[in-house]
Image 1: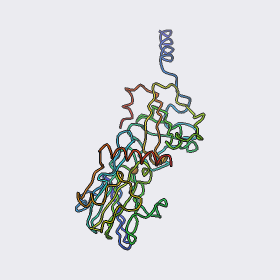
Image 2: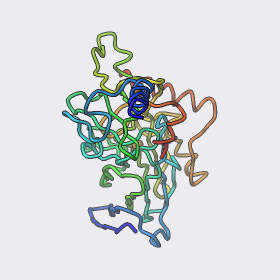
Image 3: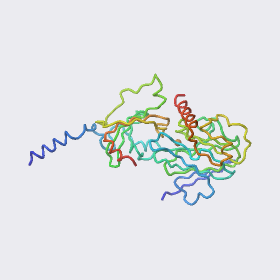
Image 4: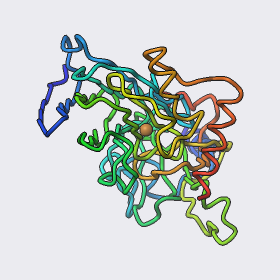
Length: 183
Length: 138
Ligand SMILES: [Cu+2]
């Protein structure tokens, strides 16, 4: 049994709850995102990659990849100098590295589109998008990578979006991967 | 009796593959090698690879030395960033190879992990037969 360590921070419009280990029985109402990888480590992803939640609903990432560590890190200048890709009045989060079986949770209160990435796996296309509430949709957010991020419209329509396996999506992810590697 | 024992010992010596260089056949390897899971946040035993040791000065290429659950060396791994492999001004020269005889080689992509945080290629020199790769499968 893994002992649960819990730290809860309240900062402005965001509530952060960091969890190490598995918080059994405390998943009620939380939206779950799995961090996954294939057997040889050549492919890594969030499942689902796109998620629609209501303001104040907890989102929990859990590392289900036995062979790697992952992060869920908001696009924000505080994090590796990335551009902000979240509502301006929301507070960015960073899970830090999660080992297999470890979880991290965040509760987002500000409506809007939040993009996040995995620190070591952004070049490999390990990114995700969360839509909180029903923000006005005005075209893709800055820095959008079609085929890597699901569209806001699709997330609002379907609630939860898994990675597309169409040939076109696979090709766009491969192009993104190659471009990230050589830039 | 004594003679046959000596012959047996001699025969087994020749039957065994080229031995790994002194000090790396068993974990922990001697020298500047450190356990990867103590250098960065990674599981101690990586499915498909094993328990890894590396000299931090040689990152990212390595060699990484991989051991099974009994602490026996199974492979030597080089981790070569894709960006470097497509850069005409970048070379990997004179990488150490202390693991002894190589049975076969695997080459495949890895998306990255703490320690080598970018897409890279694993070049795995297996020191055991393919059938024995299961020793580090999980
Ligand atoms: Cu990752």
